[in-house]
Amino acid sequence: MPPIHPDTLRGQRALVTGANSGIGAAVARALAQAGARVAINYVVNPEAAEQLVREIRAEGGEAMALEADVSDEGQVQRMFQNMIDAWSGIDILVANAGLQRDAPFHEMTLAQWNKVLEVNLTGQFLCAREAVRAFLRQGINPKLSCAAGKIICMSSVHDIVPWAGHVNYATSKGGVLMFLKSLAQEVAEHRIRVNGISPGAIRTPINRSAWETAEAEADLLTLIPYGRIGEPMDIGRAAVWLASDASDYVTGTTLYVDGGMTLYPGFREGG
Ligand code: BGC
Image (tube, rainbow, N blue to C red; front, side, top):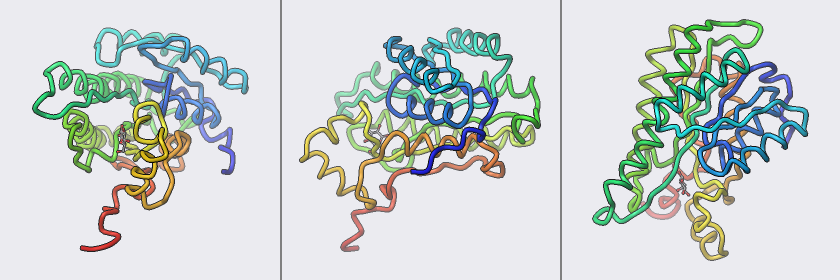
C-alpha cells in the first residue's frame, strides 16, 4: 500500500467517535497520518483511547482523547465544546460510534432495540448537528479546505443488505443512509459535505465470531467476491479521501468498501 500523504489534511481538526477500537481507531490513525489533528472519542475503555493518543503522538501527530456517550445530548455538546476550546474549531467529523445487540426478532427486547437506535442513529444526529453548527459559525477557510466542513457517517453494507437476527442494527444503518442524504441536501449550499462509508466484513472485535475460526472465516469468504476479509485501514483510507479536497464534488453519497459483498455473490452461479 502506498503511504498516506501527510499534507492531505494538513492543519485540519477531526473528531472521530468510537475511535478507541476497530474501524474508528484505524480512521483516527489514517487521518493523523494525513496530517490532521485528531480527537479520539470513547465511552468505555479510556486506556485504549489514551494508548492510541500516545501512538499518534509518537508518530509525530497531534491527538487528544474525549469521553462522551454519543447518544447523550449534554455529553455530546460538552465534547464539541472541549474540542473547539482546545483547537479553536472542527473541520471533519467521522460519526463512527456504533454497536450491535443481536437477537432473534421474537426475543429482541425493547432495551436492545433502543440501545442500537440510540447509539447508531441518534448518536449520528447529535454529533452531526453540533458539527454543522460549528461549520456554519466558522465558514470556509480556504487555507484548510474548499469546504466549510466534512461529515462522514459510518454505516454498513446492512444499510441496503437485510440481516436476519440483526433487525435493530440493519434498521439503524438504513436510517443512517437516508439521514446522510437528507442532511447533505440541506447543507450543501453552505459547502458542507456529508457522505457515508458502508464497510463490509472488516476484521474488528464487533464481528470476531465471524472470522476467528478457520471454519467461520471460510463461511464469511463465500460472501466476499474479492476473497479477503477487510482490514480496518481499508476504511481509514476511504475516510481520508472523503475528508479531503480530492473528493470536493462528492456529497450525499455512500462509498461501499466491502470487497464486493453488495454484489449479490449468491448469483455467481445460478440465477
Ligand atoms: C457488522 C459486522 C458484519 C458486517 C458484514 C457490519 O456492519 O457490524 O458484524 O460482519 O457488517 O456483514
